[in-house]
Length: 278
Image (cartoon, rainbow, N blue to C red; front, top):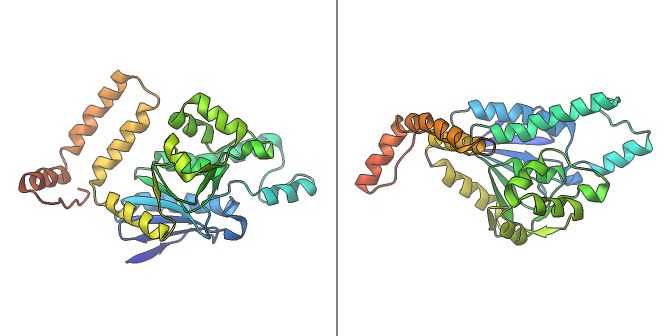
């Protein structure tokens, strides 16, 4: 059964399909470029899905064949020709910096810190800040036709929405610098070989296959997955002793759940466990 989550905008749509929450960039005429509506939509959808007990996995994807082209370059050019002011954004330098920081935290940081697994499903191009947002997800699935490009160098920009941080974690600093400096157009399989995407799925019926992948993930123990994500995120910036000390209470909590008891019984009984999130 599918139901809609109100985002307050048509630029970003959200719905729940079974145990999968689906967030969709919906500006196909601009290749799903970012907008104030998109930012507002994330600020509405992500907290709602965090509190929704039926949602166990969240998939972020794009309408019309692209994932997200990042910044709206056409809009940037129009603003530049009109004197530099962009509708909905402040004028002063310090105010613009504060504005961007707020937007980045409302999207990339919110995805990274979300308590539920986030899967970015790339039906086509993910470029610039759109790629950064895909990198903020926990898992990336790409259609065979998808193109991955940092793109910032092509428009004389340095990068935002955390792409430099996420990409460095995935490929190391030297490769991340190469990808930022030269901005090559990577195919889905080239991105797979670099570890930027986790799986490449056939173009035909990509969305259906991606949702099925998410449904499969949603069948696993949600409390354990939340604690796994917490552990791995922490490991990005702590030493081993801190990681060990933090893993211990999370392990005890996970093994105190009904889901753990169900999994142990199912293992012995040679059957598939049914997890309830308790």
